Length: 525
Image (cartoon, rainbow, N blue to C red; front, top):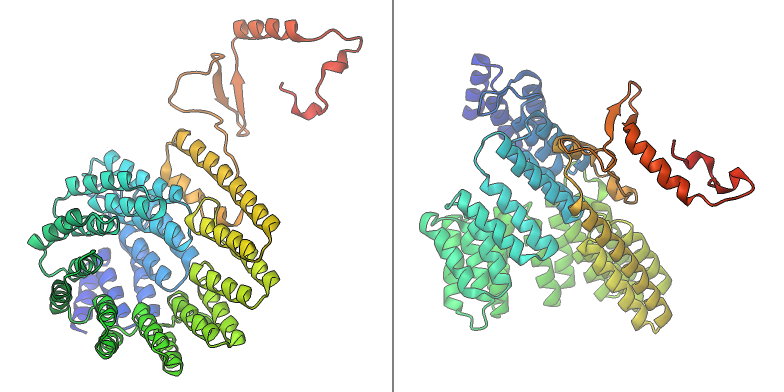
């Protein structure tokens, strides 16, 4: 309340300072008054004025407020509105790195678009920062490196980008953390340990680094249980209410065989952050494995009630998808296929691209002998993902294996051929996109390149004119007419040369029209 009063006083002193509106919005958000949070941000967007660090006024509204409102809409599940706000932010200030990062992560994580969609955003952020004379952003390179590793599996390129991030900021904890996680996942234990120890020299109370360090130590071939537990305890000492630490700590304790201690840690996690769905999921799965299905059902239901979003409908929204999926697996293992179908359906209603729910549902139908239903689910799920994405490749492979298990070799081969055709087409288009020249205005490009590419088939683009380049091979001049069309003014000497070449290639015929194309509308004038 005191902070809110101070922010209101700041607005009375200077109504055009956007920082006060942002602070009021955060106060309202912490009270879970999302309606008031939106109103504060919208009021700030309409009244505040902002300038770039060099004093240049923004061409639109305050980009910080636009990005904050986009994050709020994204949390509420309004992804299209969030994307529109991020695009407005980068239009207003093209060098606003945070908006480019938010836009890239929204498209690659929530919309499940390919890495190319995110790469365009990061390249645009890098280019705009250089144009504005600003130093490189470690956060841009860190987010970019994470995407290259997780979406493409390109470790070499990810390392290069992490190195660029650390060159920009040697004390960037996020870059050291994600680099350490990547090295640990590739079993480069010494490199990962060096990354974590480096962060802890200047950021000793970073609970997420301690958590990742502990998880890495627990996965080593020779596990030092005391060291793992000590790292988890250090993380909890740094932040006792971090549910993200309590959940993996409980899973490690459960592996050691102390189920009661694991339950207690998970219970503490739900109390520390009741909206942390992975804690609820881990607790429910633990009870399922221990043979307590009724207890697991209660935990899943409580988690859905706690994590449900206001606009999530009956399914509860995006955060509840993993809980519905785990509940569906429980019901399938208990033999209640009708209840399992309801749970899987709710999971896909909450997140229509939830891979775990798709594969679990199809596997259940296969085990029940309902192959036609499983095929229908696969076909419907494949439509949700763009060609070339990891998720779609996994679905094609699962579809093929199902046909093989059913003894349908012809069907398996047909699925494989379809997947290969799509992969080759996606690879060609990706290669063409990399070789194409970049459009001079990336902000406009990103504004036009919306999520419609997920709903419509990809179309090839052809270069019409290349700006700031020499003339074409015919030494032609390019003119833009009043009606918006493009004309090529070819010099007379070139036309004579071309006409001579064409006249030598026209075959003789009794009818002059025999050499004309079938479709007269496609002739070149």
